[in-house]
Image 1 (cartoon, rainbow, N blue to C red):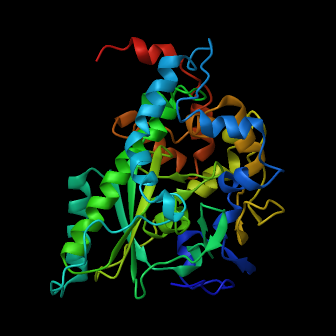
Image 2 (cartoon, one colour; image 1 turned 60 degrees about the vertical axis):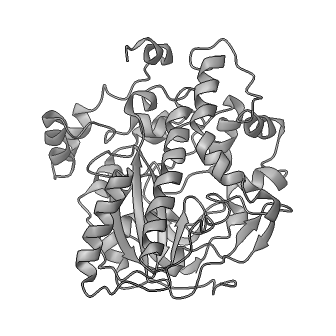
Length: 391
């Protein structure tokens, strides 16, 4: 696929997903994401950002603070290992797969495609296969090309490169991967970063295996992580959850505690529908994530359109973070931060009856009661507590 058309408007199905696209919409260029900018944009790049990236490659510079010791960084970096191995394998071609390029096919598409006369049954089959390989959630939506990046990044020189998907893709399979709740409770810390890395390594395996299954059926299947397109709108359209003030997808199973991967395919599949339950109405009255952000990178007030931030998509009315402030804080800590995830009232174990009851209240007109009930939750757990737990 060559560079796709960049300007596109709203669509009839947007309202059901809570997506509000304006006339100013343009596809996002991946070279503008703050992580890529940290390699070429002097307004983002600094000695701190260079040290941040180096810290994931045996240059962690541990310190005495709880959660930032050598073993904390060691666990975090080890958790990224499988993702890193997969990501680096075609680096000499300028492809940082899973992040700035889609994941290459490890198996060919079978010559003979299996006849599929029931896309609804195939939807269920794919979810069963995704569950078998280890995905915690799975949903399917249409191939909405507005959320594809206008171009990807050639990591050899950080230039723009064509976003090379095969032609004829009709569906996007979205997979959700739960982050460890006990580790998330220790944010901000290098230890907590292991929750992120573990899921990137897990999702690399899961998304590649599900894609290989589809190719063995005789259909195209491109495995994708952070590359190729914006996963949040696909996840929302696939009915997995709702977009929140903290820039995360809130799911009824795991709250915001998820990473997402996706597969672009021409496999005949029935599509799931968005399932708005009232998260936006709750976020309208809740600012816990914005209040807790150390650098005030998260927005207060109502959703707005675009903004001046280079690393924000234009022409979508939504809550938008200040990417430079957010990543700047990450860089100074030399690890990722998800305080906004930790303090989110939806960050609960919804397998427990009391949290199920809270969820019903939070998604009802009595949501202010739910917010009041949450007032003492979300505090940071000392990272050393995690190490002291018995296996």
